[in-house]
Length: 346
Image (cartoon, rainbow, N blue to C red; front, side):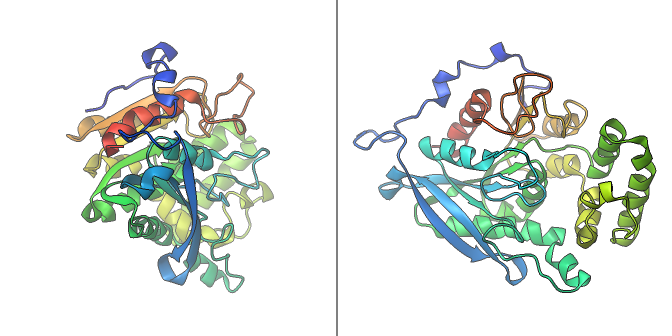
């Protein structure tokens, strides 16, 4: 059952050093603690695309099987490491998470999404071709393909795999988890993942952060996308980045996706990790539906909201710090290990 509902104080967690330190995971202890090995991978995604990624494993996976996770990036042109060219700083969120996991006995596969990095680039043909390339179901299928690629490597325990999705990546992980039940998906982590429909969150963000003149065009754009699956071609420039023309079918599926209802029906053990200083997925308004869904299930689950942590799971210095750069929050690292190590048998 879910362990926490509301905001956690710093004192509610065990000392960070008890879990965040590197662990020795074989009885012989002959190898150096925390040593890892990297393997570049390329594999087939949905619809003929090629996805490029990185498999990062504990070095001792050479002598014993290890659990494995697929890390799913957030929205926009975010790459396998969690970096987005639109962000003002290097983020490296997924790279940091992968290194944390590998040092503590868990392998991970992270990949460039379609159209990003070294994966198949965005097509330059017709609008219809681009819409098909970026369809929501294709992104979900790519998560499933990444999980299949993870299982293809002999070092991975096939009975101890998990997904970790950040932000929009958590929605893709949720959607993919239904198909992966037959693959014995063992656990799922939703990090800074919204619990309300994106339709409602976008309207709230525009009302909160944008000029009033953008509210009506936003409402019209959302209504048109939900009705037709097409993005209007006369949006104000400020909204064109939020609603690119080629993303109509993708946005129609994403805007109407109800993460809380999908989680409520899921039988996969789940950890929710949320930063209390997140400006994009706002505690507790955007997060509470997922917490309620966890409480309604008869399946293992926990929700942790970490003080002074941003959307990118970094410690913030104050109310004006957006929390892009810097290392992974030690309390987030502790939370992940404290739940994942026993859940996956690492």
